[in-house]
Length: 333
Ligand code: ACO
Image 1: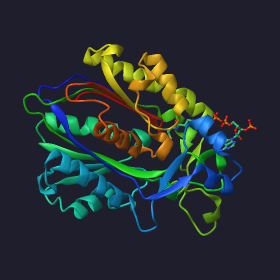
Image 2: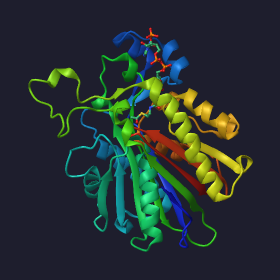
Image 3: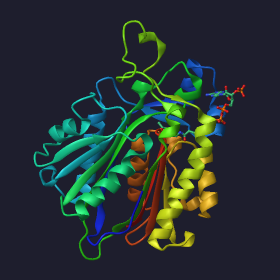
């Protein structure tokens, strides 16, 4: 699904992120399952990840990231009109995590809801909210990608437990004023024929967790990594190319590519295929692992705050996840 740029420009007015204090290193994981720091670093690029405390929920991480984004945007919670949280690890199946965040922020004038698109959720939220703002339905939106994946990880399965982590990232979108940046082009796609490649099979209406099946890890992430890997590279490359083309840019015009942080080998393959030099591709998965919907949001904030790009620069975000889903955005900062 594609969208041409709208008449009303929408900009990213502020970004924020939060990761829990607790660091879980590859060395610690090697004491829990049959793995090694060498295998994890070579095959994924991940060195450590963050794990939320038992009493630290997806909404709490979301709220901390949101407060930082609001501060950077120079806005108060009361001014926010729309809150969208992208997550596959909501605090509660219902109400939506966005409702908990609205309460915690005191954003009493906001409409709040969640979306579920796994690792692609933050950019799905960006596209939805961009359109809602440019259509005039809302003046601004707070979009958040947040996950507590440690609660849906099988800590006995070495093929997945080394990959995931917890955290949250946020961005404030609003109508752009003169001289401000713009979300120039967005793209999103889904292939529901491939749901089985990456899923949490239990805990929903298809397979409720019961006393009988409680020990079978049905509520945890299963992935056919090799198959997902190949499709991820192709879909992310295509999605990025579409927004770059729609924006009318060339590879050499792009100051920074911010990809989903799942595997350094996937990121390197995409950089190579887009002909963007590695130094212009933002990577932080060594510190946080794959935080699903939070990953690109945390990376955007870190790239923004560490000066990986400046006002007026062209940046490209591109993501891939369960569904299978993918999305991209071209932003003039
Ligand atoms: N430590 C040591 N050995 C391991 C580990 C481990 N942690 N995990 C797997 N192995 C072994 C396997 O058993 C296998 O051994 P074998 O050859 O004797 O059978 C060997 O290592 C190779 O395993 P593969 O699964 O083929 O390893 P691969 O190189 O494909 O890497 C990985 C696996 C990291 C999961 C990779 O396939 C990947 O990153 N896939 C894509 C992930 C992704 O992008 N997901 C989408 C987003 S996630 C989301 O939406 C929540």
